[in-house]
Image: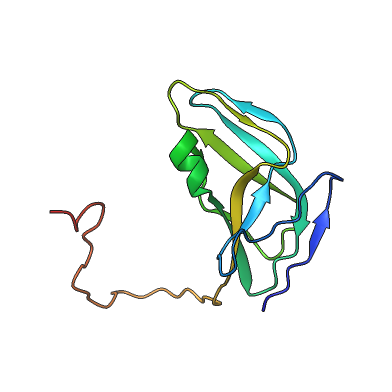
Amino acid sequence: MIELPIKRLHPDAVIPVRAYAGDAGLDLAACERVELEPGQRALVGIGLAVAIPEGHAGYVQPRSGLATKHGISIVNSPGLVDSGYRGELKVTLLNTDLTESFLVEPGMRIAQLVVLQIPEVRPFEVNDLPDTERGDRGFGSSSV
């Protein structure tokens, strides 16, 4: 079990919870009202700060229901919350709908936070990389 200290920065901020037992993400709720016109993006505050444990990272991801029903996504998905960050969590929402605006209300669940353990990585330079079946083929190389 990973403990996640949370500091409420706004009195109306909602402490994140899982919708169902076993869910990977904690639902993040907006702490402000924002209207997103078609194609518009906006930075929406959550009203909370968290202390991601050292050796871990938080990933802010879209909610599938908002994406499917309203075309609402996150511009930099997944957003990365490093363990040293102590500022307010904010989400850059994007309305991909071409005709309908979308109203974000305080308390509305707009994203989810997944906390994962991150291995320490030590980069080092080499002259050649080990061969693989895929090699340097990318950007659609696996499609028919």
